[in-house]
Length: 315
Image (cartoon, rainbow, N blue to C red; front, side):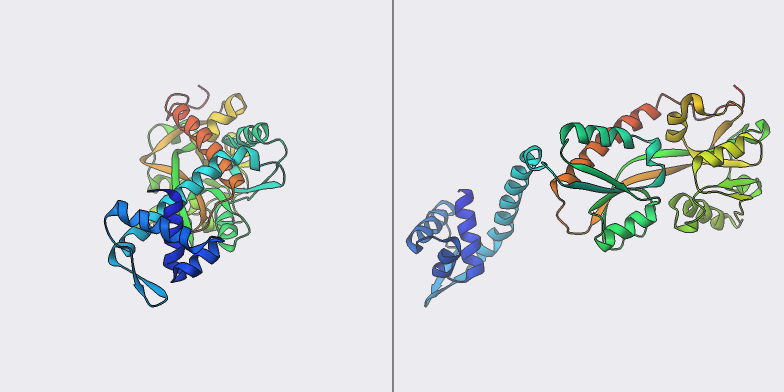
């Protein structure tokens, strides 16, 4: 059984006659008929019944069809994967991502991509996972790296890692033990991504948890970015929630006055790739996703050992 025979078989199946199939493939009909005959001989079954000038597929042909399509698609994917380095010789790679991606290996992904494909321009788009999801759904972006949960209508979602969210405060009494959602509801809270409200995945998780416990989350201060929230928390103006990966990235820049503890029932940000359901990704998008997944896997391993889940203020 050869790929050529499978191609001829599928073309004949769609064309409805050997002559029409041969015309589509720019072949002489005897050549196509001979390859179909050899395929039937190897399988030991008839694939077509000759009906007048046309052909009628047998049950065996219908059974073979999905396997033939899958085999040819796999070969096409393999060829495209090998050709990525050769094909990415210009143009622009556009990828959507959430606003705090810069605290993760966002710049490393771009650097690695540019080293491999220096002729391709890179454009990173997005401030929040919800707007990236909508842009992918609308076809403005091929793919993106987002934080769950999102509205996944029309999207394929593939989770790749998660990062624990911790409760951060400059007040030692507030970070002596893991916090509950009731504790958070009572605290002077500083939340980020104010423009997106409940469209922000982390806020949505937090508010859903509060709703289930019958309490309300009412932040005292709403800001856009993580840096501002951290600075305000360090000044003792309120407490905030930060993913551990961001704390790792901040390193020595993290104010020493701040401490943190996990949630009593751990709270996580889950990162995932998204693309339009059923869409075929370009080589550039697939390459970007491959590099992103490699770097995020490194981050996931580092988080297991690099940063403690709890830390006293001033320690």
